[in-house]
Length: 318
Image 1 (cartoon, helix red, strand yellow):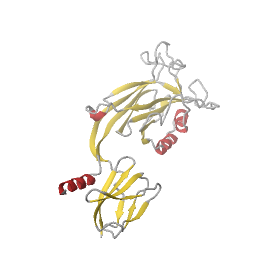
Image 2 (cartoon, one colour):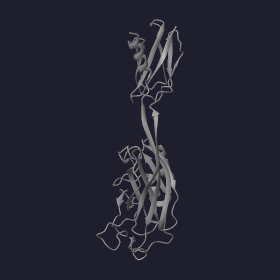
Image 3 (cartoon, helix red, strand yellow):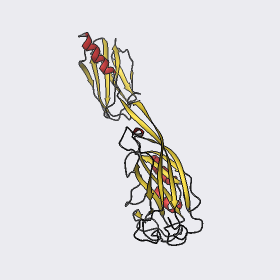
Image 4 (cartoon, one colour):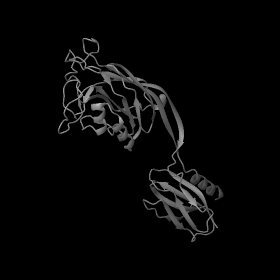
């Protein structure tokens, strides 16, 4: 009986599971091919001359948990994407990302003061937020921009690079944000009313090149894998929950539970038998309970959250 009791107590105290968490470093490189076929026979796509001062706005990058939560093609542009596409301003988009519970971080790369060239930005990405979306304005233009929507950098093979994709390159194409009229390189145009949706300008004037049978990319984005880390972390969403006083004469307070969805609070004796289950209510910052009906002795208090995390601790009743 003593061995069984010891085993049960040990299991209850090992209440916090471990899992592998990974982060990766990437250099994100946007390379622009924006030019006329005359100026660049290999890459040139613009069938009209480039404007004065052709350039690209700062590269705005967001990492997020699920696809299509930052940007979605075929849907109306958010105020942040509209601002990037029309003026190159990044502040509204940054505010959107910061306020989005699905997003992890906003990063910004430098702009590009010429039609062709590269923008490079280093970012660290968490396994929990593996999607990358980015945008930069084709400037000047009505509301044209280049974007990548929800690129997943996880490979699904944890045996290589801790599950991160090795270096690879994707083609990128111009988009119309659907917010401003105009078909030339002009930054002064009337608003589109009603607002349209984000549409591809691939092989659409002026980005249709000389050969209409080809897909004319305006550039590439390369995700350069640098390194990654794999660490064992604790699922510990309820680690900050406090139980006091302990020892107690019967009254206890369970505090710091705001924001934690508890599914159960149970009290076990040292034989592993459930002797008390405390009612759980949502929206409380603390729970007060009286255990004076229990005999004096040592107990185990187990708290479990809806996400599966749990916490157990010794509780002494005097």
